[in-house]
Length: 89
Length: 451
Image 1 (tube, rainbow over the protein chains, first blue to last red):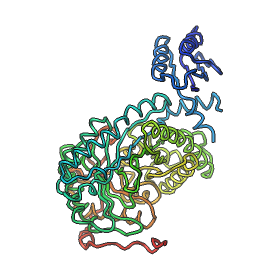
Image 2 (image 1 turned 90 degrees about the horizontal axis):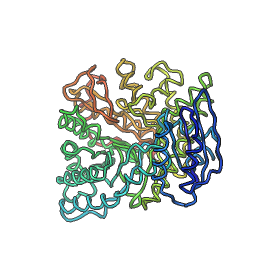
Image 3 (image 1 turned 120 degrees about the vertical axis):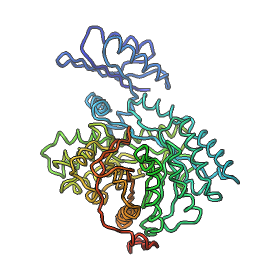
Image 4 (image 1 turned 45 degrees about the horizontal axis):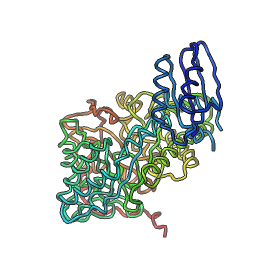
């Protein structure tokens, strides 16, 4: 299953490390990553592939959400299908 | 593939512009529930709805989490109840209350289908059923009722129109303590559709499969935001912007609808491409019209702007979905749209202008508060006018007006939640009672003969 992880908020040290560690622990491979910092605001987008076809999405989303809260940023994960559907004919 | 900009655009649509799936509605046939008595039928109806819709709310919630798009409402529509209770119509309320109980237990916000289709004539059992509507709506909370009184094929049943004026008034008076809220759950249609996912007019048509998922998308805020980037574009280009935006919104709806149907073991019915406002700021259809260059919704030019919007939404949406249906267009419920509320409060929009607008968009005179002392014959006349617009133009029209008990022009009524608030608008003081009292059938227009 492909998913998109987005991280936004005030920039701080170790964000990529923390998010990618969590994804690794949950058997998700990062296929693409891009980040920008504009005026201290951090925005990162990751395309990830989860090894399991039907992972426990709720648990993964909650873990990322909790990580986001602990570092004061907004971390969310969504099925990649929604972006394919909305932006490709 | 998609790029970072597309990802951020989608997230902004949800977080800043109120993009959401307005409703996932599960249509359930009640025809297998007909039994010998009202009590047995009510029990069978309750059991069937509970079983078929058991997983609706948790499924919609997990879809919402996984795709990152809010699903605002989870709803159920059922076969018109008048068909199920035809052998004991006076006891239809038993079935209505059983449905309301199921809606509460399932956690759905509305359940539609306390309905009758009488566009070519009312059988005795249908008239008796319709007379149970006010009491049943007063005794229930989440049940919605609708009556189809006309169609382009058959004309307008003016006996039903006359009766519905009285039913609307009685429904208001039985829920007077809550501002006549029963009328917010009662729609009178012409050309009602069988796969509408939106309330209060949803019911599950007899031509439908057993269990069907219909999805209503929304996103007036997204359309307005997109238009704000082209403030000087001509209207051809503005229509293109609306089309492209409607396409994206509808694709999200299509994906959710197909996935919901798969997980619920139901058939994927349709995606309804409607722009449905809420009272929240930034979620208004009126504000799209103002973005197109009107100082206030209701001024001259409003009907043309709405025609452009309605058509562009359909064109973008049709391309995006394999099956389109329902009402599909722009909704203009007064109490549920902050732009409409403000225009009405400022005296800038009238019932007459709203009626003109309904000739070019979805549905009709919707969520309009009128004085409590409006005669039943005037309510019937409003219904007749709307039905005529629908009949002649081959489109669905509807009337959902609230004659608010004890309130007069300039007062305001608050329904709360998505139903919003509405200033009481004036209606014409002339008397249509003789016209309405004639009854009979307004014949179908000449262009109805297509065979």
